[in-house]
Image (tube, rainbow, N blue to C red; front, side):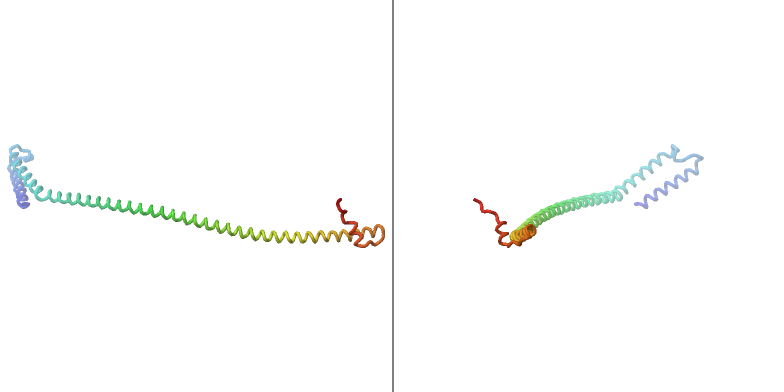
Length: 187
């Protein structure tokens, strides 16, 4: 088929060359006497090219376009499926993250409560120790106070004896000084 078309082109080229030798100057294809032959060859070439295009080239182009359309459709379907899977994975991730945050919040609350209870127990224990130490200290203070009060009486007796002995020049017995220093009974 292609060989026939090529032979037709070659014959047309030879005819045009032969025509240009017989005539004078100018372009032979613009000569109105040759229009009929040119139109014949134009029609024949157009029909041959149309036949070749419709039977060979255009079906191949159509197949390529169909294949491309199918590939695009498959790719779009695959992309849609992957998008759905990604959305599902993202939703699962966000749910797991929310669950983890909730779990962490629960653990933190539980830990805070446990530490607060331990702190409260430790505070009560320390308060009890402080109360015991405070009672011991109060007992020691009371003992020291009573010793100091009794020592004050003895110091007062000795001081009074020394003062009297300096003032009057006589030595006084501690019992006499104690009798004088004791408060009088209330009536």
